[in-house]
Image (cartoon, rainbow, N blue to C red; front, top):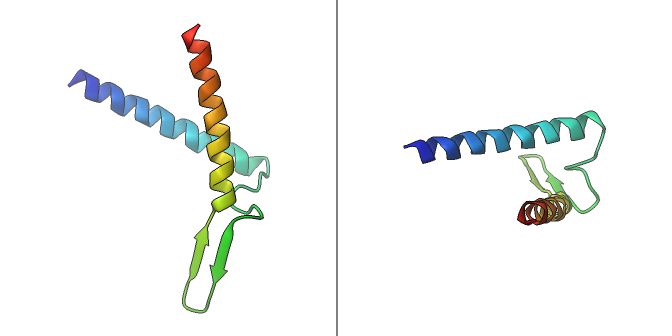
Length: 75
């Protein structure tokens, strides 16, 4: 049962850090979610939004960041 508690606490910390990063991005005016490659279709009955460019940007940043962290921890 201790391992489940550890994973839940680690997941909470990660979600907290992601939320803090999103808050800081909005605070500094970064246009995440409004980049040129993001698709937004608005009609009379509803709207559709698919952030392709934002997803790619976040994926690249997280890949680089995790690779750097893993290399530092390996040494």
